[in-house]
Image (cartoon, rainbow, N blue to C red; front, side):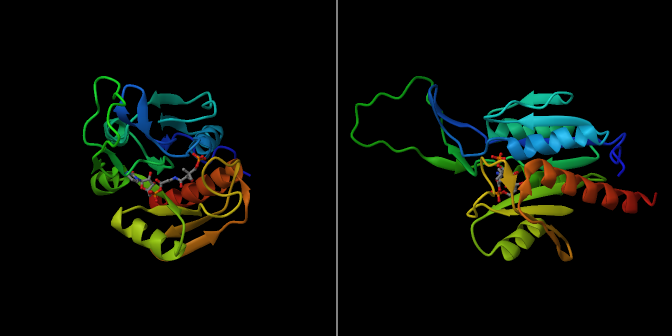
Length: 223
Ligand code: PMT
């Protein structure tokens, strides 16, 4: 097996769950641990790639040997990704980006004087969709966390967000999705389902994914 399948490639990976602040001590986030994105980053590095990892809130240590960029919110993640897009060959979006953020972040801790308070939310920019619009030669891989009609939703996201490849996980299944060490995923391209993998470690998923990407970009480059 070729251990250096991604030698010389610049890979930009996002991981973790974005943090959307309500006030200085409270925020909205999700259950992403960063394990999936970190496994991809570590594996890409071991396959010879130069890796930039943009990580939001995570609950496990980040891998070494990669350029680590820490962010909090979706907006910060968007900026970090856009800044580095032109200098990337492959972009993989494993992060769980909050779809909404509070309209305003209170400067001081919100007091508990009222029986009821409202936190108004506004839609966040879609980072993957923005990358899909801006990409030139980059190979763009999205993720999809689904709870039903996985094939249909995955293909819809792939097309809408203009990805080259999409990794879908049914996060309702045991051992798949948020927080676990394992995942159960399916890969899709523009033609449809490419592969449905059995339950395996997130590192195993990362290796399968990166091997497929390496094959696909080599075909594209005609090497
Ligand atoms: O971190 P772990 O605990 O290991 O969990 C891994 C995971 C479940 C988070 C991961 O496998 C995963 O599925 N990540 C994508 C989660 C997600 O946000 O899915 P989505 O279907 O809501 O979004 C689809 C794609 O659009 C994703 O690539 C996401 O990064 C991107 N997106 C979504 C919303 C938004 N505002 N901007 C985005 O870029």
